[in-house]
Length: 199
Image 1: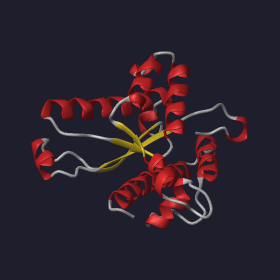
Image 2: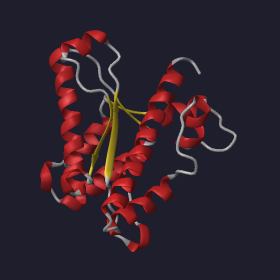
Image 3: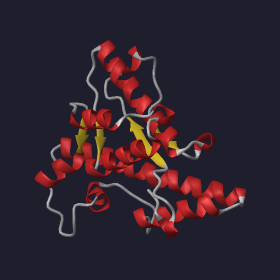
């Protein structure tokens, strides 16, 4: 999100990292694309509402495929409160535009068996000497970010992106933001695997 320099609140990116653990499922679905994907306002000049709608359609499609082909699926995040607050904020601001989810649908998703918050497990099993933020605990598990990168700096990058008229600078800033978010979702997967393997 960005509120830098007095800008209105805006959620500019929903980042996902798809990982298929079953070779049988991978073949069944015809080798779907795995890895990082950002649903962002950088794509085709989308609005935040359209970016959320794209992410929502992607998630619902995976849920539908899991039901059709009878395989389990999970959507992992780190700190669901932040994620769902952001989703609800965009939904409220969009007022039903762009085909995004309603607040009730978001709440239902949060309460579903599909949504899991890695931070809940970190709170139970990991005692960091500093804090339990993603970057602190993620680095213990082996995750990496660009030196000095953090959430506050990412809002500065986004604010510069919105104000810049230089094509090369905008492309560079966009790539920085996408890489930063990719590192976040990769860290979430690394933590999931680390905890799952018994630390």
